[in-house]
Amino acid sequence: MEITLENVLTVLRKCFVRMLVAALVVGIGAYLVSRYMIAPTYVSTAKLNIVVPIEARENSVASSSSAWVYANRQVLTCVELLQSNSFAKIVRENAVIDHNASFKVTYNEDSTIITITASDNTPKEALKVALTAAEYANDFIAEKNDALLSVVIVDMPEEPRAQIAPHPLRNVALAAVAAAAIVFAIELLRETLGTKVKNENELARHYEYPVIAVIPDFNDAAHHSKNDYYYSSYAKKAEEDNGQE
Image 1 (cartoon, rainbow, N blue to C red):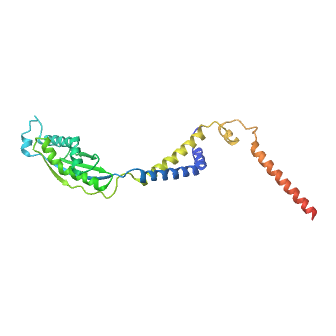
Image 2: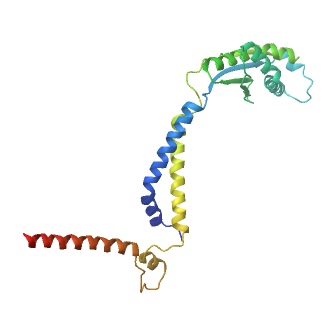
Image 3: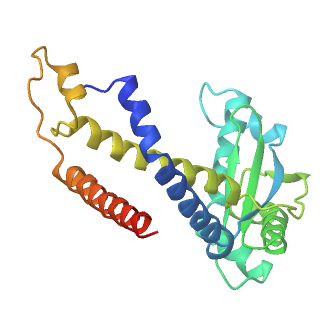
């Protein structure tokens, strides 16, 4: 059976309450999980400038390489050094934290600026990791690289004021919409893929042949018969009471 706008509206009317209940239940669950079961994440960021001395660029042995290309390669080397496990160990020890320091180092190929982004479950720990990484970057690069580079802190990290994850309200909205959509999709598939003919109107709508007979609903007929019996008994009793008066 094809999916038509009429089918969609019919299914929507039939399962609207179930969609609403599913969205409410799943939304509340998503909020509780986001609020109480997932640890928050805070981020603190520091920006550093890798300064390559002019004499180092002029004395570079890279054939047919410009000073800018050489400087860019040195910046990339610094990024790789700061992403090493050795530097992460130095940050963890000097930041005095009892877990592995979580930070990443990124850079823009069009500049010599690198960014250190530290994340942790508390604002103070995130700031501590970012600050330690920024302070020890120069000494670590000088020790591991002989290109006479120097690291200048452009932006000092600050203590984050708000968490970046999780987002309870966004999670609630996504979970509620997903739950309602799943309920609607299941009901729509049941409606369109089912082979059961529900009434004579549906049969006449899909086939050109006239409907000459319909099997009655025995349950409904029995219900009406029962009601008629009760009504007849009540009416008969009422007539007898009136006759006695």
